[in-house]
Structure formats: structure tokens, C-alpha cells
Image 1 (cartoon, rainbow, N blue to C red):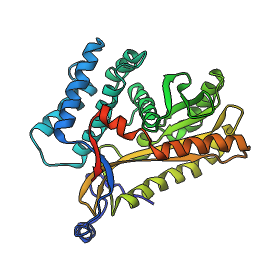
Image 2: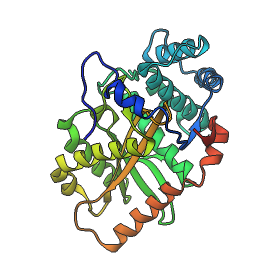
Image 3: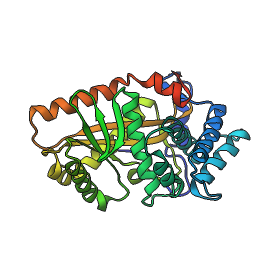
Length: 316
């Protein structure tokens, strides 16, 4: 299931197939950001870093991706797959910088981002991308009106069962999966909290600077879900080995990508999350996981998030 990657090509479907969908009219709901809005967010993010006395070194990965995206949007250059990947990444990152600018201890977070390789073209392990994944999960919780904060194991939230831990793990290699899971379990145990391991697969399963072509948003989501299911099957042994346990209820596995939708002829970033618990678990495990899943699915705090972070919700 999925795309066939051919070096030098940005498309994974022949033009004859893409043409079939160009006459369809379907408008899925989405959070949209205008180019002017993204430009303002980039400027604001730079100002926030400066206010925290965090230097964005000229020529660094963060400086380049901010500068290149700003230049492309100001010049109104035609959309390209690589450009859209960068634009969506920058829009999300800048929004999180703005939203979390007053979080306790955020200066250290910003320093990690500014000092690391956060380029979308890189698939090397990145301290900056690791912390961006933590901010992304914190964003998901806040969008769902779950009280949450950055703290060991990585995030602590409360959705009706007291303090609940999330250990956030970004995977870069198939060979490092079990090590990351083991580390996440250790973090939960050391924090003396029940919780989940939140796993991000973007840099493991997706090609850099490429978009995926899909007939519709629904098909695109099912494509990403298929990648996650295949990952779970490949690593079933390691996943079952560490959860459920006294501290770990299971796994929340995410995959995000920029897609080109053939029915609407537009680029769209899509994120898919799946809960995984392959071992035997008791009723309390299921209660906690079900409660968290329902909160995340409802996204009760989405409108408040958008008002603070920028953009608006409408049919795409």
C-alpha cells in the first residue's frame, strides 16, 4: 500500500489518472493559512526568539527554512511539492512558537530548535525535531482542551484520571524502534506516572521534500493509516514486549504528510494518529485510552487554538 518512489520524480501517479479527478468537486474541512498570515507568523516567531535571547544563526537550518519560505511566499512563486512541504512545516512550527512563547522553560526548547538541523530534506536524527514532536503532541492535547504541560516524562496531561504521562519518541530508523520504546517506558517509570508512548514516524516512513498524491482526503488518510498498520505489524514483537505494563498503557502512533488531492487540486497537510495496544490489558487500561482517544477526536479546543496560533477553520 502506498506510493512507488522513483528518483527525480515528484509524482506517484501518471497524468492520465490525475486528470480523471480534476472535474470532481469535494471540499473537506481544514485549517487554512493565507500566505500573508504565514509571513506574519514567521516574523513573529523570529521576534519571539529574539525576545527570549535565542539567536537564530544566519545560514542555520532554521534560518534557511524561514528565509526561503518567506521569499517564496512574497514572490508568489508557483507551488512545488518541495516548497509546499516546507511551507506547511513552517506554518505549523511558527504557530507553535507563537502559542507556547510563554510556557515555563520554553527558552531551552527554542535553543534546541535553533541549534539543530530541522530541515525537511534531512532524515538524520535531530534534537530539534525531537522537541518539535513534543510541542506537536502538546498542541494536540491543547486543541482537545486537555490540561497539559511540558514535564517529565515529556508531557503531563489530565483528562479525568489524574496526571498522565506521555513519552514522545520520534523514530528515524527501523533498527532503533525497540530502543526508543524501551526508553519511553523507562521515562514513564522514572516519572512514576501511568501513560502512553507517543511515536512519530514522519522521518522514518516518508521521503523528504516529496508530497503524496491521493484521490481524496479520505483516501489520503487511509493511505497513511496503512503505513502505520504495516509499521505495527513489522514491530509487533517489540510493541507487545513493553506494553501494556504497570506504567505504559500502550502507544499513540502518528504520521503526518503533505498530500496533493486530485479531487480538489490542492496541497493539504494531513496528520493521522492510531492507538495501538497489542497485549493483554485490563479494564482500567482501556478506560484511560478510550477517554484520551475521545478527547483527541473531539478537538473541543480547536477554535481557541486557531485564534491564538493564526489561520482559520473553513472548508478547504
